[in-house]
Length: 299
Image (cartoon, rainbow, N blue to C red; front, side, top):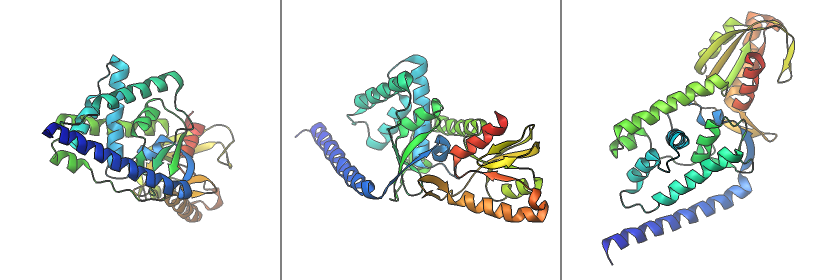
């Protein structure tokens, strides 16, 4: 048997074992996973160091943007990453390119299919759906549906791994730059955790407990209701932020950041020190609700 044939057979066996692994995982998830709605921010918002599938999503954003500009069925970032992971002899490049191009065309024609669930691990890190996540971000899809697994998934490829395996430094830096741009865009959309308060002291306290992304002074001119809480006209502070560990869970079928609820309760408790019952504290359970808060006051 030729060396080329041996390499081909090894890849076939690897793909077969991978499919078997996924089949077992899907069987487990069928009995234990939860279906929840979230926003792209819940998946892509930074939690400290970028994790592997956030890195892959940023690379897919770059490839999709290039395709939409040029209509050329060539995805240089996908090709470079595939080469680093599988080597020069990988046989699936054409199929990957065709599948990605078809997915982009489908999104441009009809958008995100709501019965198309992403998969996340028990820490709500993306496990499956990199290409779709990139397109949901680019198309500013409001609601993303997720199969929230109870499994912990090991991410063994970080930035250092790609550096040591000699991913082109120029491509690597462009992917990281795009990830930074994604963070800025998520904040600009309000697709993040948000706190609305009339207390400067509470806003300052929040900045010591979270990853602060941005902060704005806003004025509300009419009484309104946000997430079930009545708001009077006046001056407020809108803070956009993330968590090192959001600690997502599911409460009554809804995605909930346990950490964000803990912070909300801490701020409410502290409010009595500053403005008694006049302090306003409004924050959501996830980035989807954060965006609702943002749009309620920014428009």
